[in-house]
Image (cartoon, rainbow over all chains, first blue to last red):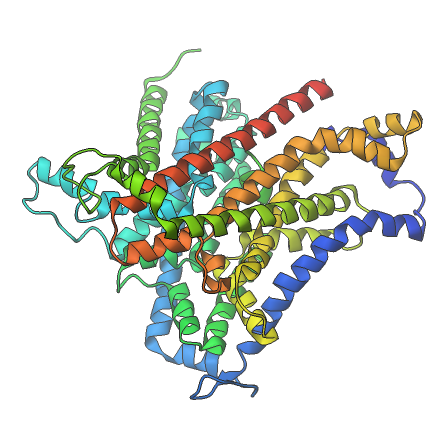
Length: 305
Length: 271
């Protein structure tokens, strides 16, 4: 969108002779504070965490600098850890699928059938929750699912149940619903950016040429919004791998995800164990980002206001 | 254009889905706000009566005052630093002049994608190793990691659409680099810078996960809310939540208005 506004002179600038060393340092200098900050506060801590994950703590929780793989071995040998990890992956996949299933029809309707001006308003309505407190959005679900929440009130008013039920909150289903809610704006924004560029007359053309609507959808629309779909998936899937607030607030004892284990380890001062789990997540995240790096459009999701 | 019955049906279904989705997005917030006016000691149905009592209580609660002070202090410092560092970094990222520009771009988007648990734990481990005491300064360090990339993205998007002929015109007319930057470039990208700063403020004030790992004995607003939720909720939490929602929405509104005016201006410029 912005790339094609670059003037011809910009291109000419690229072809200019190599600038002098001094000029190059001058141009790169503004980058240094940011680079230093991220190296110091992000890259090095991640590296240290990796090192920590190969160390261990003794019975007094003092750090012992002995290189070994026991933290990882323990993780993969303990059924509860592996189960929680698998559950986290299943949860992340399910939420991603559900998020797409809701946001695709939503954004399709928005782009195709809603007037341009109204589109911006609706889109704003979707972005607003994205910028309001994540913690409060999770907490807000107590007002719906809790014992005194709206759902119980509704079911009692319609006579379905006689007494308020405590079954709606503090389980995996509650975590599932709330996670969809929390991450929907990401998916919607990514898909909107992709659909906005799509020329819908192509669908009519395909159908004129004999395609059924579902064929036109599958073979014309889907391939063209591929990057949007992938961006949406990444923006929902990855954060859930590190999600611990939602399980804490609405998941109860049974709803823990992998990040809850990390927090528990950290609270008990077992940094190496926590670091090992964190590294397992980090490896997952990195691999996903590397595989999909060409299709990921971060600015589509975060840089529109 | 003739519309087939099937297309009409699809459209009808889709509008239902879209409507339901918007309800899904706002219903929890509506009830959250409603319960802040509840008279009884626990938020929820049945509504026994409406009152402003919890708002009054919130205003006199000294724990909230200090949490609010900490949150605002952190957010302001974070916004100032992140905006300065981020704006500076956006220039070479967009205009070239650095080696490994691709790697740099990845480095500046990673903290947005990486879950906060990893950023927080990494910092905590590092800080513990260095023997630095935890406190608001370590929270500021943690918040810088993920707010700066947001500023970089927002400012870079703006710089990408920047018409460089304006700078060359200024140079032709005898302006120095510094003068061009001050009188031409900065005023034109100012809306993006301000928007970036406002986004940093909202992100920092709301941040729970990274704060949780990097804070000392103090509390910020989200941490205060969590402790309240854990030890039995009163509608006071809902009142506080409502106020926070209104404030962040206002800040967000100003930010997006600024970006919007910027966009309109740019469009006119390129015509």
